Length: 387
Ligand SMILES: [Zn+2]
Image (cartoon, rainbow, N blue to C red; front, side):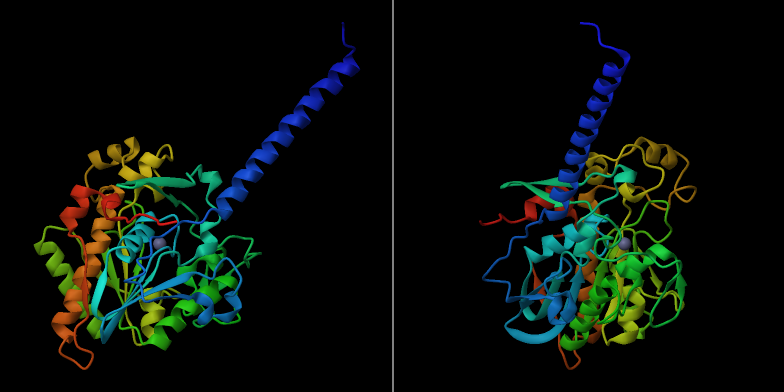
């Protein structure tokens, strides 16, 4: 049967509409599934004392996606405390993986450990499709593969929209780029009735203030071509700088390249600046070298996230460190090993200089060694999720 021109037109446009509907449905389901996928964490009921919610400190988060968990591990004896923040930027996986590893391994003899694994949960509900970024990655464990999400740097627009033309940081009045209005690490100290991201920041600030948390460590990553990698950024309080210097010394003596720098006085909204200014905590931020955040990477694959290997970074490395890259990109195992080891040394440094003061020492066990994490891989330390 010969189709007329008109019939052909109807047939082609019908096929096109059906294809568009299939694609719309498929991508819609994909977005929906990703937004609703919940990463699981193994909670040792005999170790984790309690789980608090952000809404305890920032009530307007109650019932929203941003009402993250705060895991609290208390020692038998009271003492100093540390807050470990993972998941500020969900496109920096070593932060979440390190906080997860510590949640599933640490025990506390003296003092208290607070752990957040998903600081900005809203930012875990979307990714960067225009960067062709992966959505999930798997970590092999003795119990099977654990799935984690590779999210976005910013709060989902479902929670906060539109962006202003210029983002004005609330307490300092500093003008920042528009998109930073949804960046948790430009929103501290936050505000109870502010934007969604400010309410999340407020929860963390209030948690620190109300619990009088001694040390706060915010875990990040950056691209190998960003100057502040393999770095401890420390609030400028004398005690914090002393701890950062001692930590750097111990890590360098153990052949882990690291340096520390002081939080810039005039850059606002960040943990290492505002938490140190608005609370009594000793605030630090840690950065590793993550190729999956870089601008010169090639294909965005799970392999890139896990192993940090990329042919364009290999080319850049041939030119030598200090030309294009400030440090080589490394595997997720190595980035987590670095974060975990830095946290360990920060606690040792605190104990060395301030462990004889009123609060005494913070005694925490269960840190795997730097070399152990490299040898065994992160998965070795992740516990089985009990259903
Ligand atoms: Zn970050």
